Length: 284
Image (cartoon, rainbow, N blue to C red; front, side):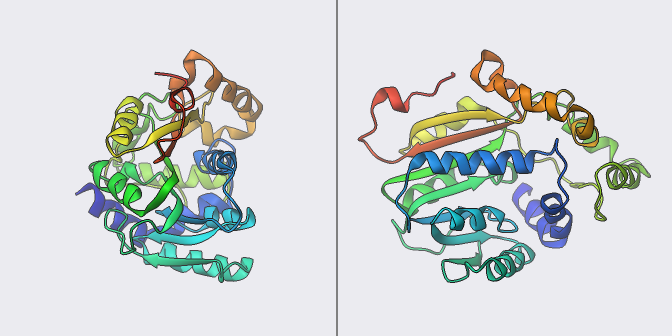
């Protein structure tokens, strides 16, 4: 039921999620992840005009910025509210001719084989029971030598270490209302704190690398991100105090402590022309 619960949540409460992009909290993962994804795509050095599919496009911020980099493509999401927001954003940004948006299932995409030069999938696998179907779809939709970006919550991440107890705490009477009031007071916005009625899945990085290999991907790059002085949600509500510390903690990605990052990004390729040295992850 994980997938069905997530679809229903983002259908009915898309405005809460979307506000996290417009009312920025320094300690929040979304923008940290967003900029890291753009950097990864830039490292691919795809020709301008390359077609990209964004699986689980959400409110369309990533596709807007990919358009600014010279790319076109399709955003797919199961939430009608997310797709409506993406289309409005595309119109206002003047990219509606380059990017289109469709309501659909990321595990059964109604598009032909080898339609795209790249596929991005950020924060989607957390709401699916298994990796296999979405990885198979990404491999099917990519052209030879196509690039794939896979991003998810790290099971061993320090920042998300309190997510399970916080989930149960918010179910107590009055707890969710208090959390929403506190977030609005310290961060801003009117929608309050997010509150799932289910637990999203966390991932083991080694298992994700193995799953990608099983579906024909060779890993080009891996990266951990979102390190913080305090675990979520404390890192968000105290972001004004620890912002500079959190920025310095991002340097942990180049150390053996990188596995404590709450988010993990894998960049892969279907090509057989990548050397073994380039394909090998920097951390095992």
